[in-house]
Image 1 (cartoon, rainbow, N blue to C red):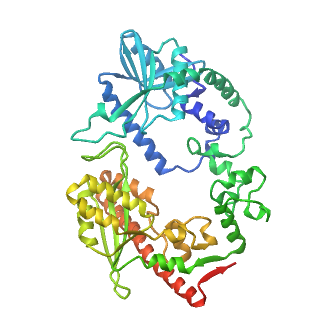
Image 2: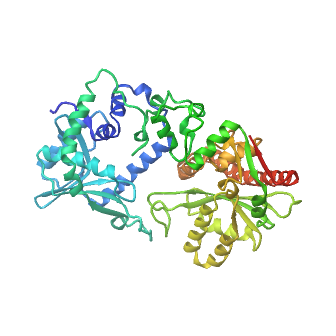
Image 3: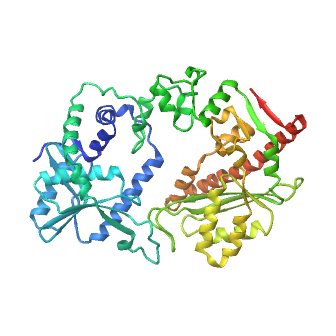
Length: 503
């Protein structure tokens, strides 16, 4: 029986990203970031895609170990399958010189073996080639020649018609040429990483872009502990933080007065130092005057299933499942509110678009925040439901963007830290409204919650539906109040001479 491995495919890739990450993963689990629910959901989705891809090669045998501590059994089982003449093996496991890997699908055709590594994305990425290069290195050095190795990934052009057509859903892309080019790198890197595991302490590797590339490291809270939690150089936009850090600066107060920065981080730093705000009243007034009444404040929430769940949809297509709509028919009118939320089981789009067409009427401005998102969803709905294309196109043409004055920095406040999202603007302009009291506070959590709704118990479903409605409702109420505040500030500034520039 083979001895336990020192490196696996996963830990090898950790070491390629950062040897310190490898060491901490092996020996300092206590320093790991708290579990990320969203990242876990991405991992679970990948498992589901991998299981579905097995249908491309039906009739195989499974070498998956019963738990993560039993890979030596999986290696032995794989060899038994090969010796028994099996031609399709799932999770085929191999080990060479203390390095272990498992390949999603191993297939024999004639006398030649072919490997397929399944990825839940829509294309082959650089890290996939390096990942597969290790698999090829281990498998071939274990004595099993491979004719080819491919990445099997989702087909971005696949459109579901009826039951899932697995043969059309996936694409196979040979990466043998790239894998062969990486073999010397793999051999050298294995030696290097084995050396890392012999160290008495973690290697001294500073923070950098590798902390998030190609994947977010799960030890960032430990490695970034020396960075100020507030007003660090990494709050500056356009990637200015890493350049400043490399020059020895951590806090905004440490940056010399004459230090040259690009326009956006320079503005951010200027207003941080002054503690002021700036308002250009005339362009804001002119822009807002293009918002005729009635005003419809609209926000969508979407989810993106990798495996298309509904007829006519593609992998990772953004599907609107919810909207909130506040309506202001005149400056003096009472605020109205309407909302829609799918059931989490059926395709929500048709009912959602029918309600929108009815509620948005034939005239008035449709106010969104970052309008390109809502316009794209409307265009996709028009493509999916051609009978409603004229009405949906008309709605799209009436959409206006409340984000624009902040994006153009006609109004800027030092608290924005260079940003202009609604989550940035709202606390400054309308501090009495806040997402902090909600159970759902951002779109990623909303999407994840909805995608899992069908699997919950009834009482959990009721609570999560309430949470989803509260979150989306606050998004549109926030727009109403931000516009009111913006109008008020513009009016005051014009009376005072047309602009505000306080530092």
